Image 1 (cartoon, rainbow, N blue to C red):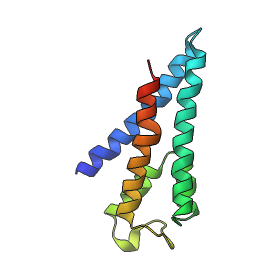
Image 2 (image 1 turned 90 degrees about the vertical axis):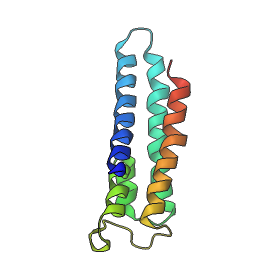
Image 3 (image 1 turned 60 degrees about the horizontal axis):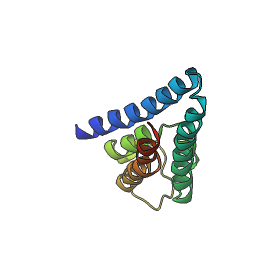
Length: 119
């Protein structure tokens, strides 16, 4: 069940980034602080999509990554039986490797930059 905790933490991080950016947008004089937060978040999602595409995970995985659903997508592919996996047509990575890449990209492209930027 540790995978469930990791999944929840990933989405808490994603949602909290959005709320922090929205809070900055609502505060007069701090709107400019919201743009880098949304930029970092968008950059992270684009990088996840590019990695999904470049490792032949399929168009579905690429599109899911752009909308922030890659965590659930990868987790499902690891937990589900092979016949229930969503979309790994000719991927060069196993489902476990895809999940690991997504987690590493989340930390390096989103969580750490957000930590450095947010006051």
